[in-house]
Image (cartoon, rainbow, N blue to C red; front, side):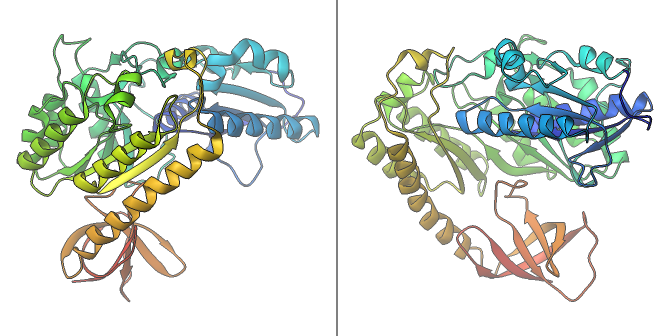
Length: 435
């Protein structure tokens, strides 16, 4: 790869979107490092000469952020501050042809399954033997672990299958080896991620294998926390809850996006489940794993959503009292079956409904947090900011959930576990002292 600069190439990777994209960037970093090419992630020193933008194309806001980031990097290239700009990820996969016409300043665009081609452009060889090895972009004490790629679901709002393809599970031995390698690097917590976690194994082993995978990962010495993200509620594999209850190092935590609670909306979204079935499932989960933390995500403003649907969703939240809730506003995505419907809820109304629902959840969250005061929780120390240590309990995942402000005069090590007695509760965070 000839560049205008005489200096040695240094690649900066900019990652947008979800944790699954983060893992892809880490894998790319590992491949470049194995080829003895200098690589950094989100480099602020600006001493690199090549940029790879790993884009998100999930919803409209994410697409806008990706395009703006690409344009910023192209502008730096035009000013002579960069030699090359490459683009990969979901947006690039989905809109490659139009992006090539609209942003000619990019040297090349690559899809989500074209890592070897991207490496070739960077004058690197794809090393298949680097199974699961990557340079972590997260702090060294936790990591995301992608157990599968793609999705076979047909939810009417979701464009992920268009960008990531059909579901493809990674083998249990490969994942166990990756977990062992991560522990050797100092990782104490892994977050299992996938487009659809509970489908794991159906393609590779002809049966659901998430429970067995959890058992095998739980046996990895030095792995103190294992956390589950993105479980699909329809045909939920209850055997994973037995493993969760029996194994101390599997967090009593489940991220299960439900998207809505109105049967009309669930049917229109092609979620393959009813509100009544979801309520039964939530009750069964809580009965099997007492004290489990349930996180969900919801969508407001799907085509045809009425005020009655919104009120039904609010009532559902008030009854179920989820520990954590995230909200998206509906994005009208071409190529999805939802795109055939009329996007009839104005953007301002979508946002207003999202705010309305989050106000319901904010009150629930405060009440649940207040119930924790006086109790002691095992807490992992994540970082130090403004002279205070911030951590998380087993009921909180990175970035999306509560943080615990740890009041102490002791010097703590990032990544260590401490016992914290909660002294104050806020809407979304806790404060406590080491005991």
